[in-house]
Length: 224
Image (cartoon, rainbow, N blue to C red; front, side):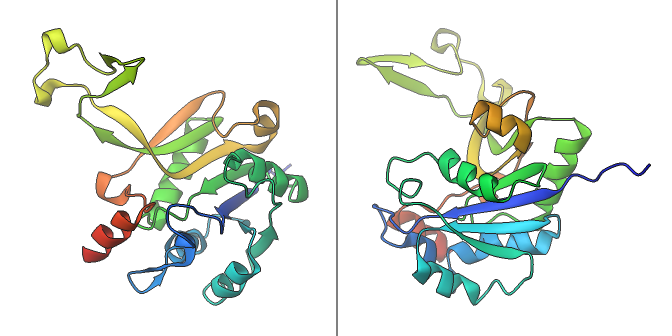
């Protein structure tokens, strides 16, 4: 009896109601709409059985269709509730999985991470399978010292300022870069969260971990 090969779904949520930068997901970034890069990488990776672009805008569908002529790509019109300003991304994931319920694992990708490449996705999937993980997040490493302000009281998060370590010897901290997450669909329904169970990480270079969220991000990254 042949072993079942898990079916993999890719979900790319694209909301039209961005407040800080209006329509940022379709704004020109290095000659293409910002969403072009992550979607194209998903297609080129060839690891997905289905790629779902979950948007609330028919205008976005029209624009994105021009560069997604691939039989594995399908558009999903998300609800107003899941596209609202305060809605967590998990809500649109639940909507998509309700319709596309025959898949085993899901990649949740963010189109605001344009510097990701196909090998990031392929190697992350290999790690997810090899380590038998339940969920995984992409990240980069930093040696910076972090502090938090709680009730106007400052406290360090990842070091002891009374025994300040040499930067070279300071243990690196993982920073979620938001590029993608992988999770088992069966357990997502249990936890209603993208991260759960045995969690793993996939480390990317900092330069490929840049998120484009503000006008400053557009200006600075377009210069490079």
